[in-house]
Length: 160
Image 1 (cartoon, rainbow, N blue to C red):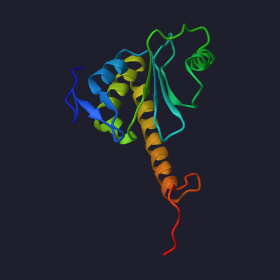
Image 2: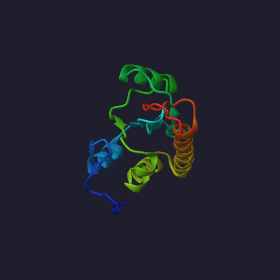
Image 3: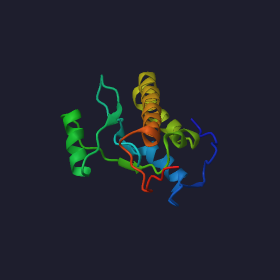
């Protein structure tokens, strides 16, 4: 399927902290990955898209806990998929923006298409379910930052 232009297709995207992402390189990395892991700076979990399959299997699409490094992640993948060789094209993306930017910049579309190509429509449904869960986690984290106890202000509270 030919890529359709998105809001920032073939461009460089700047995040609020000045980092830039070359979206075309992100799309290419997603499109060729055997295992794709996406991390957000404000969310604890990681998104795992493991499209390696054997007959009768579908890709693994889920949220997973963070680990200390690639060796620990590869051990985790071996425990999920015993007997399957380590991935040849492992891609880790530290996404510097929020969840919505994955969608508006067509990254999520590339992820879905890559998973569907490997595992069919059921994998597309799993991607959609994971995206809904991701939006919920993102919203929960926003509310926690505003009202929750897990965030502290760096400015002293001044009574009015």
